[in-house]
Structures are given as structure tokens and as C-alpha cells.
Length: 349
Image (tube, rainbow, N blue to C red):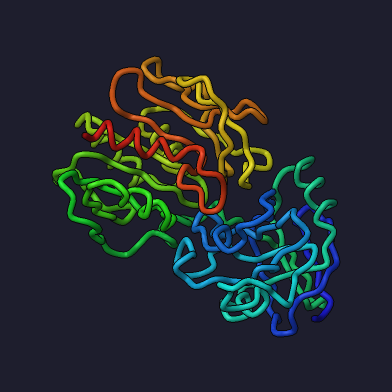
């Protein structure tokens, strides 16, 4: 390890140590996740594209890295990693690599030995910040590129359509950075899935249900996806959205979105289902939210966060459209919300 620094655009510096192979400064939006486990699933989640992910739990890497069949995409998507401590000697029967070796193979910058509690308190107080992990103290960064100003969805969406299953009901799944466990969950039902890129126009396709996936960045950037979705809402087919998909659905119906101060990231976020009058624990990873006051009259709030009362889900009052900000497919996280996939399939059937 060699000395390094996490430098925020606002001027704060956090000293630490980085692997000696790191030479170039890395940039991203510095965010934090409160999950105690699931670092492999989190880092391979395309929703973290462009972000430097801080793990608030101090012990990372203790169970190593399993095979890629457990990953949420084919590679690490985060722009960098911040930890309090990394275990160099993992212990788990299914581990194929240490956490440090995995980051080196994927060329993902790391800074460890950081006071992550102090950093998280700062981000909660001031909001998420642009930052850089650097090892060359003679050339400290002066400009911090904002990943949310770019089209991150275009970067992580699949390049060509793919087909899964051969069931009697057909689902169009719009990939804006889709986690692989979403496909696994949908495939538990007798369906055929046509997984398409974010800008694929499915208006001429025959389908029984429409699914809009999670993804990174500012939803307002996805103008192509919003326009196609808006056109297809006129067909009255069942629609389900997750995370970014919920924000895109909101924009397609004329509502507004806004950036949260420090976002919701972790596997322990409580929400209330306003229809069932029950509370559930959810896995979350989003930096934007839906403006409740901007919802059209024929739409309602379906879920609400019990941490900050923000909108966590919306539904049409009559038509079979609904979406949630959290991740019912979990991975990592609790499976309390899997029933939403069952609800979607029942609407299709």
C-alpha cells in the first residue's frame, strides 16, 4: 500500500492508503451505502456507474469474492471504493478471489484506512460530493467532472436485444442498467422476456407487460427512453418500474423528479406499503426521487420511506401501472418486496 487521499470538490481531504498499482487519479460522485454485506452485488450494480462508493460498515472483504454468477453485471461498475479496512485474507468456501485482488483485476481504484464515519457524517450534512482518489500529491485535481451531467444509461445499457424463456406471456424489459437478479426473478414466472436497450422502440412489438429497469444517473437525461415509454402508456398494458424506472415513469406522465441530498443506498431502508398498510425492509440505491406534488390526479403514492417520508412508489388509480424506487429483487438485501413481481405477473395474467 502507498499513501493516498480522497479529495472532495468542496476542499475536504481524507488520508488513507491505496494499492501500489494505482497511479492515475480517479473521479466520481462520492456516495455511501449502509449495507453490512453485499459488497460484490453493490459494486457490480450498474446503478453505481460513475460513483465512488463508500462502505460505512468497517469490515469489507472478509468473505472474498464469489464467481461471476453472483454478480449483478459482468464487471465492477463503480468508479472507486472507499473503506475503513479491507480484509486481505478472506474465508469462505465459495470465494474465488480476495477483495483486493478483484479490484486490481478490474482496475478499480481503492482507498482504505479512511475514517468512513467522519466522511459519512459530512456527506449527510452537506450532501453527496464530487471527489477524487489520488496517489500523486504533486498533481492534486482542480476540476471534478460530474458523472450526472453525462448519459450514464447509454454507457451501461446492453447493446442489442436478448430473449429469455419461452412462456406464454411476453414481457418487454427495458435495460437502463438492469441488475441480473431482476431477470432471475422474472424468470420464476411462465414468461418470455425480450430484454432491449434503453433507446429501443418497442411500439410495434406485441407484448403482455412492460418492465422498466434500474440504472444510473439523472433520469432527465434519458429523453429517448421517456419518449418511447410515454407513447406506449397509451396501450394500457401492465407496466412495472424499479428505481430509475420509477423516475422515468414519473417523467413520462408529466411529473417531476429531484436530486436527494445524500440519496438512499443500503439494504436496511424501511418503507410502508400504503395499500396493504404494512412496513417492509428494502434494498435501495437511488440518488433521485419523485416530486409528490407534481403527480397527476389519476396517480397516487404507493410506497413511502419511513426514514424521510419521500416517495418510494407510485401507481395509477385505475390502469395497471406501478413503480417503486427500491429493489424488490434484493441481491443484496431482504426479500420482503418480492411480492411485487407476483403482483406484476397477476396484472399480466
